[in-house]
Image (cartoon, rainbow, N blue to C red; front, side, top):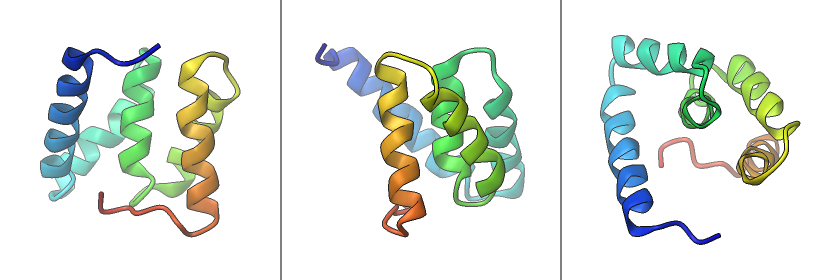
Amino acid sequence: MPRSAVQMQCSSRTHETYKKLRQTIKGRQGITELMCHRERGVRLLAATDCIGWSPVEAQLVLQEIEAGYGVDAVSPRYMLKGYRAGRLDLEW
């Protein structure tokens, strides 16, 4: 199912916020804490950013989401594949 314009806008704003937060230790700590959030989508976004500074923990979260089913399992699968192959841009 294609993402709506509202979803794309929210995703873009979230990404921009994470980019600002990850510039500081306190911001990275906050994002890292979100890897334990009850919502799978929040954990996925947090792990996506955390893989740059907390790769072991982030990979565990991504593997847990990947083991699930549905659309949420696709993104972590390719993220992990790119990370393990050394092709993942951690500064995006």
